[in-house]
Length: 124
Image 1 (tube, rainbow, N blue to C red):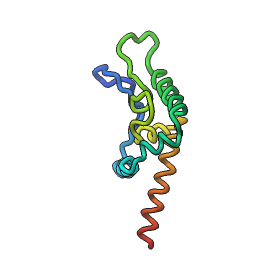
Image 2: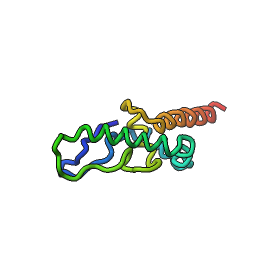
Image 3: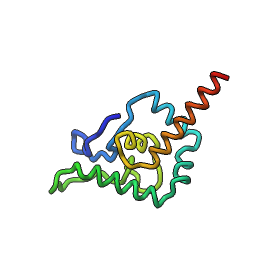
Image 4: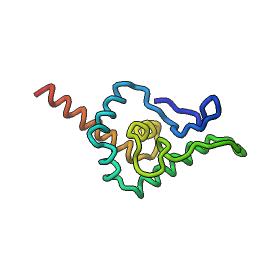
């Protein structure tokens, strides 16, 4: 996982603070997403809780912007979204970085289930 600056080198706002770089982990989470994980996580966690998650993320990211900065700013919360879940990868990356993110925690639980099913299937 890497931590991004709130701006790209050319000054373009970058809403995603943390990014997963492990290809295997990305594939595993992609499988969870393909199996409806975005909608399931959103439904299980709730939009009110998610709104607070996005607020905390935005506040943490914006705290990296120097006082008095007048240019364009990154928008939204986790993954640049304002409502619901856009991407399980970005939530999990923030969770791994120590963020208070129940979606990231949900993903970790799902990864354990995913691995248990896969391992259970290979050991018969």
